[in-house]
Image: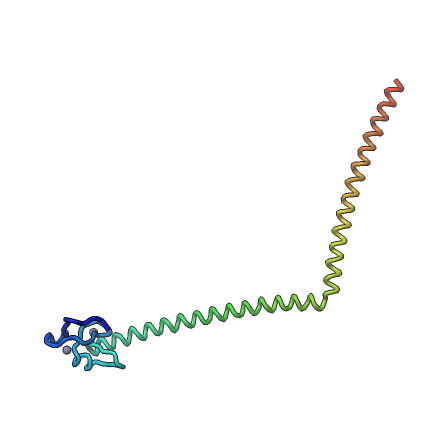
Length: 149
Ligand SMILES: [Zn+2]
Ligand SMILES: [Zn+2]
């Protein structure tokens, strides 16, 4: 309870205040507080009680709507998680059931890559060697024609 020492009732200046209106914080004496007591909460007037009810209802409505939005968002997140899990599960299931096929495919790709790099290496080597030998042949031919002069 708020400190009401030295504060008097707004309606009765001779009476010490024992409570404040829950809506407008007006100090109230025991009689005034009891007059507009609702669910153990004192109000200075019926107007304040109705205002409090309206505000309370609004706050509740906002909370309810916010709660509904949170709930919806959580459901969406859950659904997304389930879809993700289903995809992972399906992928794993597929792998498990086609392990031999998948492994063979991976091996096949690996072999192709190895073969490809080997062919490439061989091609480069051939090319280099061939070019070298062509150069050599040309030089030799030049030498031969020089000698023929
Ligand atoms: Zn009030
Ligand atoms: Zn009073």
